[in-house]
Amino acid sequence: VRASREREDSHLDAEDVTSRLESRAALLVAMRQLSPFRRRLIELADLDGKPYLEVARILRVPEGTVKSGLHRARAALTRLLRKPLISR
Image 1 (cartoon, rainbow, N blue to C red):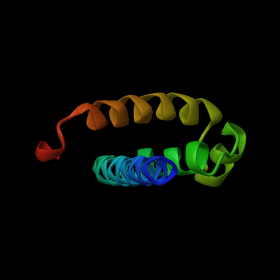
Image 2 (tube, rainbow, N blue to C red):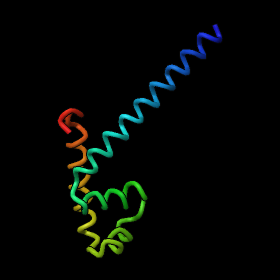
Image 3 (tube, rainbow, N blue to C red):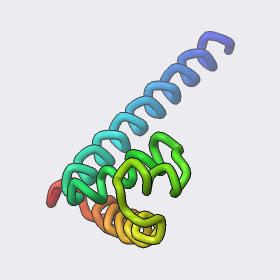
Image 4 (cartoon, rainbow, N blue to C red):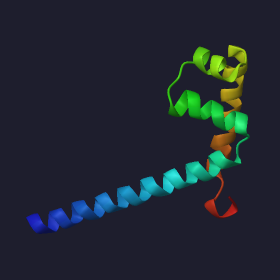
């Protein structure tokens, strides 16, 4: 019974890893389709976790531009991720 459960667990782990890799690949493909400015906004704010004010300083834009740009970038990324993988 224990060996069977371990095989099941390793199978589930393999599925989880595969799913995560597919999700990461889809995210990378979608990110490449964003404009460089939108991609950089997401990288700085969402992936690096920098606060809006710091992102604004780095990109030399007003904080409001960062906020509105992130809103649009996230919406665009969401739309891209909802597309079937084949059409990307």
